[in-house]
Length: 125
Image (cartoon, rainbow, N blue to C red; front, side):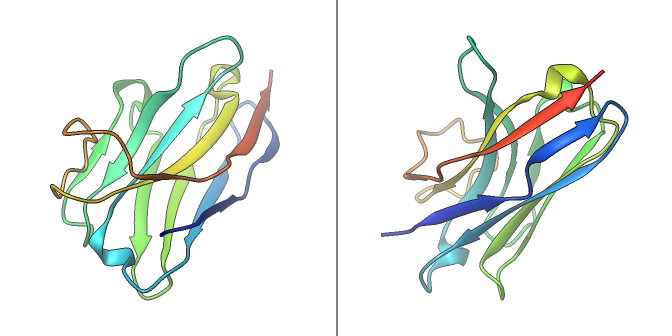
C-alpha cells in the first residue's frame, strides 16, 4: 500500500509559478513510475506529466509547452511538479499518481495503482 500526499497548491497570478510536491509513504517508492494529473471543473481528469522509476524517462503533456518540469527524489520519496508561466486554464485540482508494472512515464500502459487526494491550483488573470 502506498499513500500519496500532495502539497504546494494555491492561488497565483497568471505568469507566476508554483511547485507541487507529492510525498509517498513506504519503502518501495523507486518501484513506481510517478505522475501528475489534473482535473478542472466540469472536465475529465487529464495527464500532465510522468517520470520513470529512476527519472531516466520523462513525459509531458503537449499543453505544458515547456512550462512544467517533473522530477523526483527517491531518497525523499517525493515527486515534484514545477509549474512556471501559469495560465488561467491551468486552474485545476492536481493529483499525484503512482504506477507499478511497466516502467512507463507516459502512463499509457495502464491505470495508476495509487492516487493522492489532490491539491488545488487557481490561476487568476
